[in-house]
Length: 246
Image 1 (tube, rainbow, N blue to C red):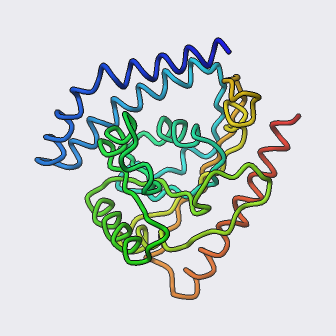
Image 2 (image 1 turned 90 degrees about the vertical axis):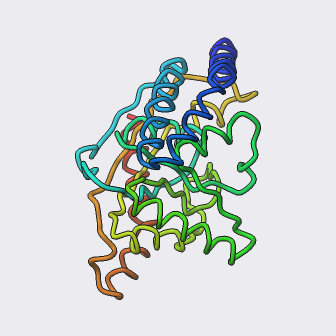
């Protein structure tokens, strides 16, 4: 209970008292998108690091050296918790937005920060609007902004993945950027799996795969690679879960 109160108070006051920064970030993004996203990312990353510290959780990372040092990356992962985004944002060491549900576009307090770091919103009920979102993501990645994509479309607390929606992979393909697969376990034990949604410390394991450039693959190779992503995550998740339970 105490951790929940501390984390909630920290998040609320940090977001409220930093509201004036949104105008600064907005001006920077308008003049120089990458400079604006980078400035906002540094601030948000610091906020997320403090929040993780307050949860008492331990983050163990594999394959962080696989992340390319330069250029945009499409990070594709399984989605079990709000903390997936928070934790990945602290590990990639680069400006990074996320593909989010359209419902969060006007979320109080939260949406300005999402816009600051370059998040884009997808309406899965409208194929036409989804295509527009993907096109926007391609342009942002061409500029140099990395994006996080959760093809399941929502948080999943089961051991089996939900069906993957592959349309977002086009952002990496058409921006000539790599895909790095991110597999995580233990994030939902921080919040979602707890009675009354109390905050508890958790041992979180994260795995980053080697990068793959879809633009360099043949049509058949791309098809096979995209189809293999859920299998890769399933295998890595089982491996990480087994290690975590030792």
